[in-house]
Image (cartoon, rainbow, N blue to C red; front, side, top):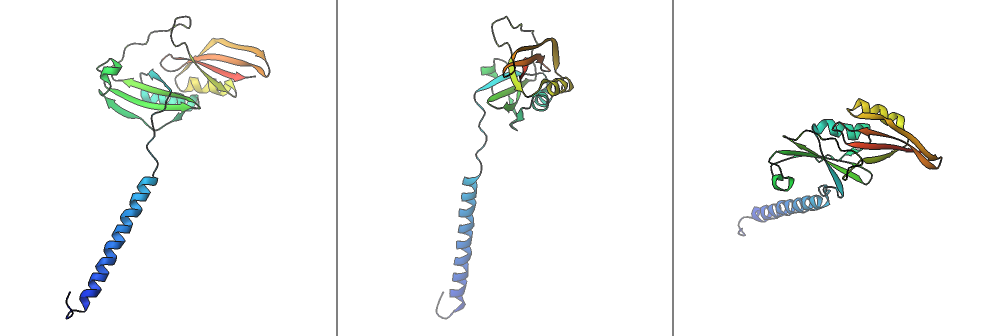
Length: 181
C-alpha cells in the first residue's frame, strides 16, 4: 500500500494474522492426526475358521466363550479368491481371547461341514481355560453350540487338575472347556 492509504498497513497486518492463524490450525490438525491411534493390525498369530453364519459365530465366541470382538469385520469380496482357492465372496471378522485370535471366515458359498474325529491328523480342538464350567455350558447352549455330555471328566487333584468338557461351536468346531481345580 502507499503512504496515502494508512489503512493498507492495518489490512496487511490483519491478513497476515489470519494467514498465520490458519497455518497454526493446520499444524495443530496435523499433530492431532499424527497422535491419532494407528489402525488396528490384523492379529497374528491367528486361527482361521470357516463359518456358516458370521454374526452367529461372532456372538458365540464373544458371548459364550468370552472372546472380544476386535471390531474389524470387513467384506473382502473376491480379493482373496486365489489364496483361499475359491471364487466365493468372503466376509471376515476377528475375535480374540488372551493370546488366541480367531479369524472367522464366511464364504458366500461354502461346502457342507465334514466331521473331523480327534484321532485323525489335523486340528483336533481348541481349549479354553475358564474359572468355572457351569456358566459356559449354559452360554454355549444359548448361543448355538452343543455340549458333548459324554466328554465331561475330572482329572488330577486340586491345584494340579481340571474339570473338562468338550463342546462344538455352531459349525461343529470342537472346543475343550477346562476349569482348573
